[in-house]
Image (cartoon, rainbow over all chains, first blue to last red; front, side):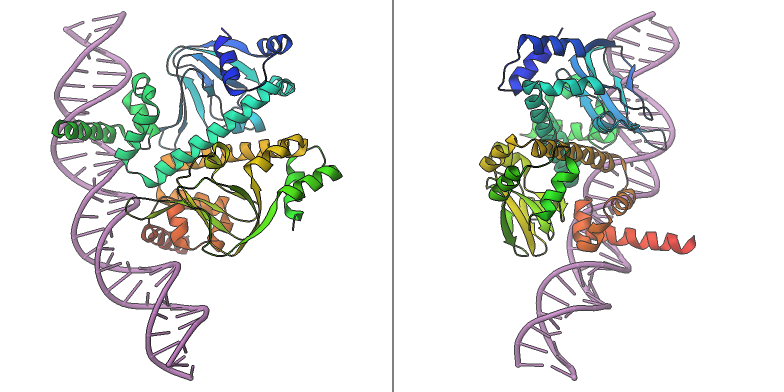
Amino acid sequence: MYDSLFTYIKDRSKTPLSEKEVELIKSVFIPKKIRKKQYLLQAGEVCKYSAFIIKGAMRQYRVDEKGLEHIIRLNLETWWAGDRESFTMQVPSAYNIDAWEDTDVLTLTKTDSETLNSIPAWVETRIRMDENYSFASQKRMNASISLTAEQRYAELQQQYPEFLLRFPQHLIASYLGMTKETLSRIRKQIVKKQMVS
Amino acid sequence: MYDSLFTYIKDRSKTPLSEKEVELIKSVFIPKKIRKKQYLLQAGEVCKYSAFIIKGAMRQYRVDEKGLEHIIRLNLETWWAGDRESFTMQVPSAYNIDAWEDTDVLTLTKTDSETLNSIPAWVETRIRMDENYSFASQKRMNASISLTAEQRYAELQQQYPEFLLRFPQHLIASYLGMTKETLSRIRKQIVKKQMVS
DNA sequence: CGCGGGTTTGATGATGCTCAAGCCCGGTGG
DNA sequence: CCACCGGGCTTGAGCATCATCAAACCCGCG
């Protein structure tokens, strides 16, 4: 159950975890099952949990005035789900997060998360996470500003090929900031190009 | 010289700075002047400095195959300039950073930045910075995926009105992921709407 | 068999880009 | 003092890209 979380921490920290620390971590991360289509967070609520995904797939999205969903983030195993701003500031979130597949998570509350600050390996891990998040954000922002729809798809294919296997195309399209029809046509184009070469 | 940096740290941390810590900080942050159009970082180089802006304005951008500049970030006083990925991982950067106005910065090298980890107030400050960066990234990503050009401009106007005063429109346009012509027309539209109401 | 979710296709139109020209304004130098 | 220049902004015409809407298709499943 907790294995993948401990591996995750080990991979990102130099300091090893003591017995006691392992116990503390086990005591604050509560396992939960989230069934397909169930919400982890609904817009308007404060994000109660930061959730480490053991198994499954989740999506974070905004619903606009017209009722259209815009995918902000897609999450798979060993990713964290939750709206960071809402969670850390304890303010209402503008986003929904729900399970796309039946998902097993380890949930952590804001107050519990503070008790973890006494664990050096955890602090190091958090720093790594934040770094990686900011690297990824910058890349994605760059892509979104300066690449065409086709280039953005190519980049995704290259950077997160798992997404294409686990999420349907209309979610991928939304994540890339285009419609499902556009993505469908782009894919057709790509196949055509490969035929030629 | 260092006042604004110390204020910045105080605003973001609970622990106060000791005399010694103040001295350490002063010793590792080297003041530099960067003249208008001078580079802090050029694409292909490793980002040597993280720079705290005391006074002035900088821009971070990518140059595409066609030679067009795409603005990734705009920075003013009390912001940090530098490519985080290149700086922390010490890998070549894909971005340029240069001064838009004559700028005074306090520069910090990667090795010096590690010595600061002994200062609790600094560590707290860094965490705040990372948080804020990730909140802002998420908002911007959301805007970029799900808002129209006009809505994006409105959001910028609301969130960073200083930008409109300090940077010319063609940079703002690029930052928002549109051309200068489009931005010009959008502004015209907005004025027209205000006439009506 | 029929239904639901997902994908594809086509027609049409809006949005935003490209290219080209002109304007405005604050220097700079003759 | 004026002419000119460069940088930035605006405007227009035509075009590419992408969105919208509607219909059809595909396929796994009850």
